Amino acid sequence: MQDGAPPHVDRSVQALLRAHFGDDQVFSRNFPTSWSPLSPDLNPCDFWLWGFLKYRVCGGSIRTLPELETSIRRHVATIDRETLRATVEYAITRFEHVLQANGMHIEQIL
Image 1 (tube, one colour):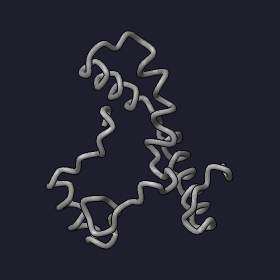
Image 2: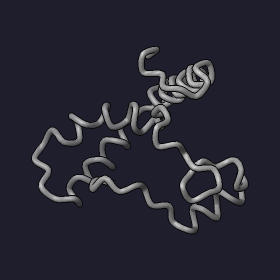
Image 3: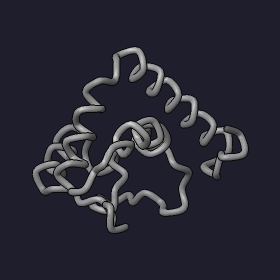
Image 4: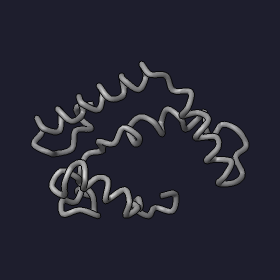
């Protein structure tokens, strides 16, 4: 995704999602219900993880993609359970705000 391309979902991942959730429960361009490109950002990796990791991961002298991947893996492994729990709770709060706003943007609320 570093080139601005949308995420790629492997066929095995699509099959797993279909088996567990069915076509009508997954929002993706690879399923009947697409995620609106103008929808509020509800992905915890986007609204929290990358901000949390940005300075830690890129603070050193990263020169290659493998170095970046290694740094991301190393720093993600250090995130404690309570931080992850708080992130999920915050995501639920964001989902509730979107529901209250009838699916509209919620940046002004946060």
